[in-house]
Length: 175
Image 1 (spheres, rainbow, N blue to C red):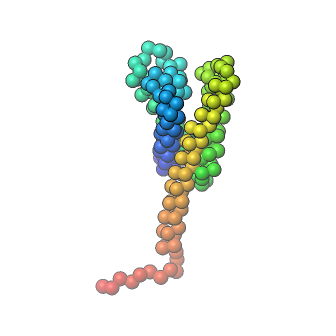
Image 2: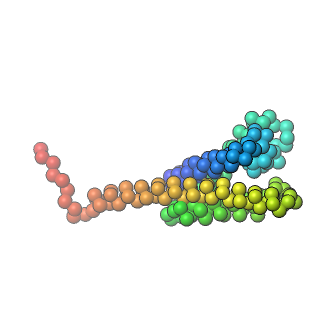
């Protein structure tokens, strides 16, 4: 298996956790953080409700929502690592912007959220800024972790290459 894809998946999961913590922090700051809100208003939870209906126990519902969220966060992390020769903060932010636009252009209408739900423009615009904050947290985290990983790997490879160059003096060990 390609280790770069695995690293991208793992860093994507870590970035998704950071994104979720920002989401929870914003809700906690507003006094809206409840199990009910997490099970009914977070996009992965809405996807699970559409897939399995309302009959799931809340704990199962939230577990599946968390797994699907971490799964597609990891998936898009792996995609970034597969497409970008070098992962940078800017690549990560671009991925966050791509995911933000994708969630609002494709997922929101599918799930009848935001503008697609016919809600007031004020709520839709707040949702947009809120969603921008969380998706750009994902992108920044993914980009920073990826650039750190790529830089560490390049440094290691350059060190190994300089040690193995033909004609370089080799240390002599006394017998």
